[in-house]
Amino acid sequence: MQTLTVDLGDRSYPIYIGADLLAKAELLLPHIRGRQVCIVTNTTLAPLYLEPLRRALAPLQADVVTLPDGEQHKDWQTLNRIFDALLQARHNRSTTLIALGGGVVGDMTGFAAACYQRGVDFIQLPTTLLAQVDSSVGGKTGINHPLGKNMIGAFYQPNCVVADTAALASLPDKELSAGLAEVIKYGLIADRDFFSWLETNMAALLQRDQAALVYAIERSCRIKAGVVAADEREGGIRAILNLGHTFGHAIETALGYGAWLHGEAVAAGMCMAADLSRRMGWLDAAEVQRIAALLQVARLPTRSPPQLTVQRYLSLMAVDKKVLDGQLRLVLLEALGRARVSADIPHEAVVSALRHCGAAA
Image (cartoon, rainbow, N blue to C red; front, side, top):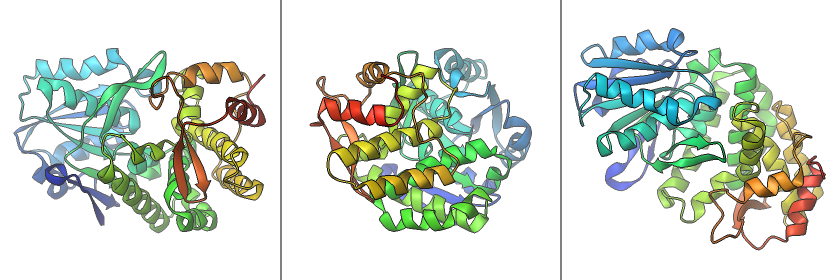
């Protein structure tokens, strides 16, 4: 087992990474201060992992909320099912919510914890690669709105994160690839050597080699933990974690949440950001091709859905969370392994990059 720490002073917390960790009481119980817990999971994962987790929590009152599976359910109506369960079972301020699932379950559970009785504890047990390397770490919680992804939420940190690599054995290939998009992102924004390692080891990751997965998850979490410790609420450097996300969120919103997986949309978005970085004179054509080639090996899309127009992208990107005082800000690459947030991007360059990557005129 690998252990990392997200250093946030008195709100610091550990990330445990390894196989067969989900039901280890010795990892969970020290982070639970009351006698009540509420496990939030979904219909896909409950049959796989719920009972071993309940046995580990046997000394406690452990209630369960089982949500429908899918990004399309990340909304107010589904969130309210968590509040209904907490109130009906009379959970008090010392309760702990436990998110057992992927990014949707984790984001909604964290947001519920931030809101219930103005804030209760919660624990992340991410079961997808994307959640293990990204959404479970850093305290971003929330739900989607029909006009924009993740536009309603809160920064709220968990008590701990337990990333069980054995859970990835049940992950569909498509979901594994979606998680690899976020892994590739970390190499692009902060670690050129890691990007090169991914080029060499992508086949092992796709085959779910445990040693390769643990290394990739640990390296990704280490990068994210460092960025979050430096800028918890995204006032500055943390925005680099959103490489490809402004374009990707536009794809998800336009197609309808769940039509493309988050990682798939981010992969196409990173290709758009890479092409735009080339147009700004920071990357060369060979580097852009390296990025696209690695994403293709990871079985990820590298072009826009053909039905999305340039104008649709621009209108959706105008309500992105990184827009500041009416000015669009995008995360671009100064080099492989080094990102920057840019606001002074020529409109024509954005349009050209979108068209080059397959957006309709």
